[in-house]
Amino acid sequence: MGRENNTSVTEFILLGLSSNPAEQLVLFGVFTAIYLVALMGNVLILLLVSLDSQLHSPMYFFLGNLSVVDIGYTSSTVPKMLANYLSRDKSISWAGCLSQMFFFISFGGIECLLLGVMAYDRYVAICHPLHYGAFMSRRVCALLAAAAWIMGLTNSAVHSSLMSILSFCRGNVLHHFFCDIPPLFQLSCSDTQANQAVTFALGGAVILGSFLGTLVSYVYIVMAILRIRTREGRLKSFSTCASHLTVVSLYFGTIIFTYIRPNSTYSQEQDRALPVLYGIVTPMLNPIIYSLRNKDVKGALRNALARS
Image 1: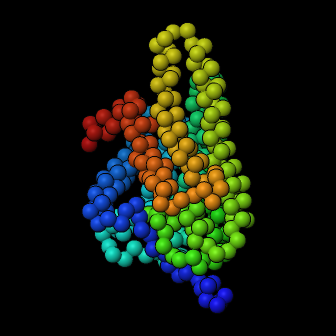
Image 2 (image 1 turned 90 degrees about the horizontal axis):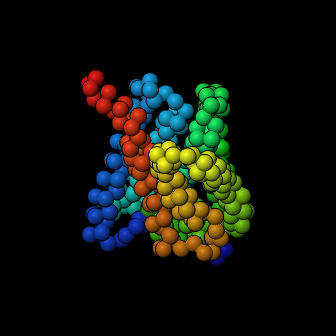
Image 3 (image 1 turned 90 degrees about the vertical axis):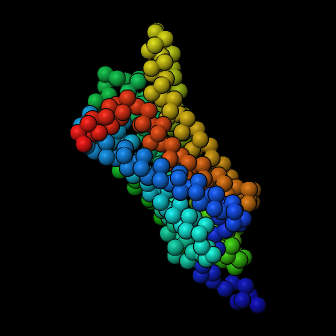
């Protein structure tokens, strides 16, 4: 009897955000549009940053990295979700499930760290403008970006490795649109305390560390802006940071609520929509909020259109 209860699960069923056929068609249309906007916006940013020499600066270097991350972030989950909405077969293999989780957590961690680095970049630009070139040299920028990628991939590799040794015997149905850590914990018949501790420790270090770093940067930024004498100067400085702060609040708020809490409080049915905000909507908004509202990017786009 014990042997039967510990039978290994070889595949999972992803139910998605709805089981209603009519709602699934609507969701297919909505997420197809969001995915295409995210892809086109981030690819456009990458092309402009690569081709226009005026955008070869630290801020746009990090934006380019963020665009690569956002393309990978959405592509790790959305194509499979869209395919499931058009198919009766909603299964995903265990290897595919683990791979999907690895890439989603990797890109999510890298995005957290890049958002923190970008906040630091804005802090240096506003609080230490005379030393900006020294503090944010090409070598420093490359090291910061490389550190974000290495730490994000390492964090995900640890989570995926620990997940791969768990046994699953409580069914194989995920009330979710992709393989994520909390719902997989709930299906495991193994002791997940070690995994949960690592999620709090490593995940918390990446997410909360990036969030606190961002918060501290913005405290100094606001203090510096309030010392500016002219109203126009204060508004101009605030406008350069408001967009970044908007996305940061949306992203970190939802991701902290998802991962930095006890697994016993997680509900697959109630919490499955949260990843839509930080894993799909935010990557779509990033190129719009960060760059397409930026006069430098608009100028680069006009120049590219004129040349073509």
